[in-house]
Length: 120
Image 1 (cartoon, rainbow, N blue to C red):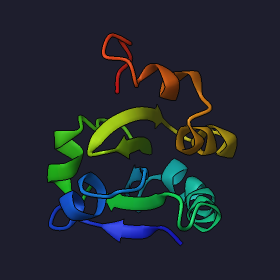
Image 2: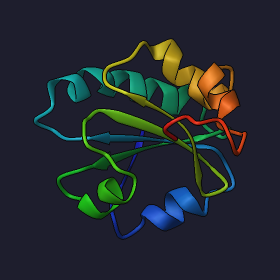
Image 3: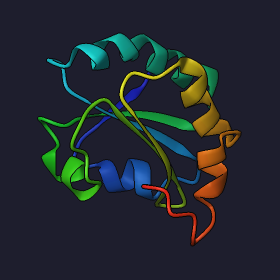
Image 4: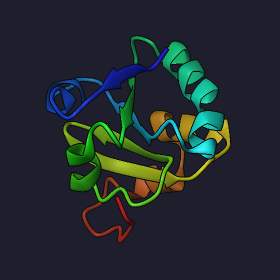
């Protein structure tokens, strides 16, 4: 199951993590967010010990959402070494989120470049 994080512990759990961290910015009133919840929990189990999967309720943690420019949800950001490396917006296929974690997506690979021009 994904770990719930708030503004108070976001830095410790996400930015200071020695593992990649997939963050799901969501809200309980958001239908697509609720639809993605089982997928997020499955990824947390699948990548246990290899990557963290974190959920941030944007209503309860507006500081983290604002700091990373979250304007629509669900929004999925992949952090590595305290930096955003890739992002996906909206309800997406489970494979797309898995690719963020494994680094097999074009966007994830491009984001490791300083001049990639992506939105991460």
